[in-house]
Image (cartoon, rainbow, N blue to C red):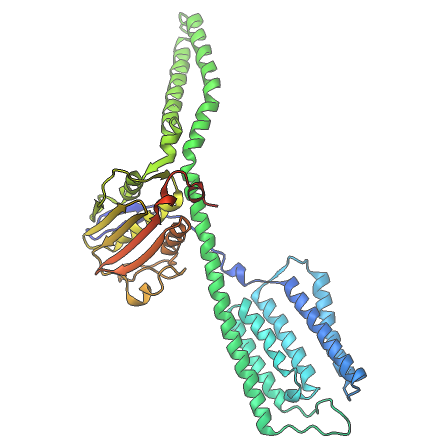
Length: 447
């Protein structure tokens, strides 16, 4: 729980779910994935050497090439035997293994023609893997090492394995062009993969947070059923205790040694029965009443926690309550609309207006405030995870997950959302009416 101050200086308690998103764990590369890729590299390198040396019969430093390929195979075999398949590498360990792969491949290319070797562009593979899964600081070091290795390949004194009666001569301009192609390809592919993987990771973490919030809301909405079950289960033994207490009072009521204790036992049993009776009335004594929620009741339930905090909260029912849709209680809709209203109250100067409208085709809820609205850059990115919905000087800011979670939950319920400034912030949420009616169980039982 945290305290917030409104424009008039009043404080209000806001319950927030502490969501721990394991960002660092997603940076840990699974060792088995790397082992499989390295076995593929060992097989590809060995097959290439065999074909070049024995089928094409090109002159090739077999001993040096065999030692380099054998070192990669030996290291990979050690890792496969030493660690379980589920082991995950910390960033420094992954960086060391990928660096070893880069050095091994560069050395093999160096003794087989350098940049004249058609397999020279493969030096970008370890770099791309690093940018896809590792922190940027380690990946940048590996990128610089790959460019340095590519530069070293340009000065390789070894000739490309080729026909003995034909000389292979690569002009320096061609070598420069190949160097530029490999360097630019490595850099472009690396940063592209890094951007895509970062967005996918953020989206995955944000969706995990959304599921946690929805699960929490569903648990809260189910507490009434648990209370009814507890009252039902405790009712029978408590009735037995009450009967025994009455019998004891009748038998021992004249005995001064036990009279006060027996009366206390009976009074406390009666008190327990009253508590269970209240729990029953608060829970599912009328199950249909608790599960069914008219649109007006839904809006009032969402708005109630945000009243009386210095910001005027105005409800406008354009079409009245006659013929309003009645649906099953949906924690996702309650949380989503509540988050949008809370956001509007936080940034409003004096007033927030909630307009409700329904017709045979649609149910529309519009939330408007008289604040400064969304900044243009934020308005273009609303709904993305880890983007704060607005900016102002008196807020410390958060992860920017609140609006993303609200938007995701509402869209899951079938709603369409639009955000704009008129001139304050304005959010329009619209559902097809059929989805808001009680008969649609898919909407109101997400997951």
